[in-house]
Length: 463
Image (cartoon, rainbow, N blue to C red; front, side):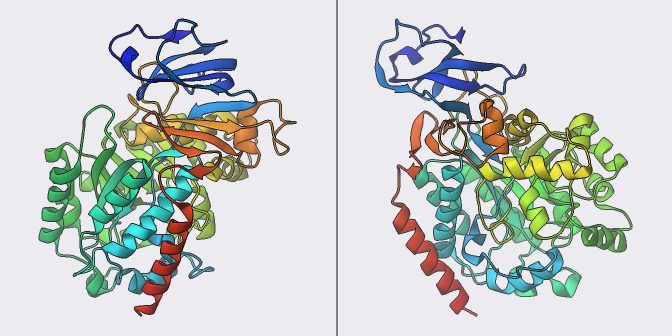
């Protein structure tokens, strides 16, 4: 049993979870068949086999978790929250056609609509076991108000740990890009707004609920000048970098025609490979690309459902993992993954990667690692979250695996990853319950549903 001595956290109210199967996802993949987790305040104080220590004081809540599996909270490494109000559109298009169809609608959003959409997206994530999410927002229409602030406020109200990505687009259609010209910003304005966002919101302290990263949208929607200057700015401010990369064959051809090289070589040429960088998708990667990502520690957000929805292809995740590339899971925007859940991406990642023709391409435990510690590493938070270990933040999921859908699966990790997504009995973020018995605790779900429906109708009417 691992535990810590009373070093100040002992005075905090404790939550005790007992009689649960536990998948810690630590470095040794330690598991307990009938164990306990003790939380003091927002910190994991003890984890191990058998019952919790008898000497515990100040126990505010004791949970008999018989028939449950405890895992780290899931970590979502790529999303576009605003897309919650444009789902079900361009249902049969590949990426470039899908973007052309949706850009005009997205260019009419404002902070009010983004607040509603962000609550819908965050609610879906929480209810599927996700405790930390990154949101890549890159559409900032003139007169749209405080859009990034609206998403941050929306997520804070639900209690999720958050990485807000100040995205951008600077290459409009007249410059050879895909977005309409009225949907892009000037490079100088983007850099000023990005720096202001970091100064206003980024909190680098241990246990922070809010990080900010700098995230030009993609090679085909921003200029080379912006890519270079964004990297310089991020490193000067000490924050991470994110963009889309190697998502489709069309993107690869676009890069070769515009830059004379493939996406990975282009990213290398503009200073966009490194431990402080992660890319979304990375579907079309050759051996040289994977090697460069591994050598530099550049991370990948694997989005299996979105890649399938847009017919982008199957990322070489097993090869990336074997090479040492940091890989986490992502939902992607809900206009290309209408479910919006991260929990279901576990099963989809395992199954889709086995279409490589290898039945062991991803195991259940490797997949759980992708969705937890893998994502924590990609976001640079592996010292704080991603595993059930003493001293880490109490971001935990308690899954019910003894019901009709799972009771005949002896392996609880297989029940979670390979079966239907189990009911979520409890989700803790920073030691605070944010989901109980499948329902949000901090906000009214019906109110969010109505606000999102109204926002979708309003946005559609603005055409």
